[in-house]
Image (cartoon, rainbow, N blue to C red; front, side, top):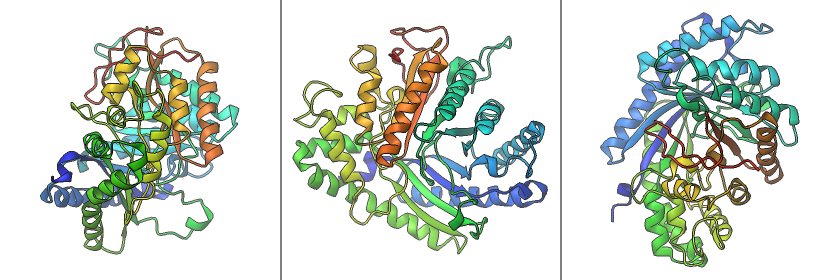
Length: 421
């Protein structure tokens, strides 16, 4: 079987570094155009080789390093710079751009909401270290503020904000490492880190993320048992990804000295297609009794993650774990509708894999205190085990626990509102 037919390239991501002075010259346009050209070259090569490429994305270093002139806090300047970037990205044909995390309370509370509101092209996150209550509070307040942005007298609401969906492009990022190709936690390396201060800010890094629920199902059906995940599943994943990696390395070799290959995020990531659920794929293992989330699930998640993080010959970047986004996985959404899945179960499974609590609908009237506690739980797990996790939840306007969601998005399926208790 041609394994490349069982997965898609969800994202080809170019990682760039911006500086304040880029906005005072032609550097901004040059950096964005060079990144977009690399992405389009990669897309053409991958398509020719038989891979389906879904999105091209650009990722920047943390936005606080470039969105304002040094020692300035003029929000108007930030808004103007976002408009300039948005216009250039539109010219380049790039629809997805992550601006990295807000690294302090001011950036989280003042700039993150502005970024999300300014354009449906932009994603960002809030950096929340373990036990940092104030950062968690700021991220929670941001989530609530974004959820209300679609409430407007205009008809219809802006599509990138309607129904609380602005939070699709925002999360609390906990111990998140650079070069994750998945949004909204993605960020390029900071130019302020000691080891990067002398780095060439014109370099472009290339990383790839996958949509591979069907491949997971195929391999785990063959694997049958948790005891064989480390052999049959691991070897099958490596066989599927090695040709893609070789192609990425060839693309970089032909692109010049200013580019470098960062790796593949080997994470299992669902699609909304029939047979594309990662949760359903894991249910193929005979030790996973009943449904996903029940007995055997934790052991399966741990074994699969161990394999994904040790694929022979694969250069890895990003989460490299299980992605369990409730509203992007039809089986998880179904379990949510039946009230057979809780946030506490997702947290438990996150202790041995990734990505955290992701695309989970919560009550529209949830409190800042409730969200703060949840974010601190995720940050605690991430810090204790030194792993990248995120918390992306959707307060659903005018909905309570148990109500069915009504998301109007090609990227999401509907479920029921989860309890935060």
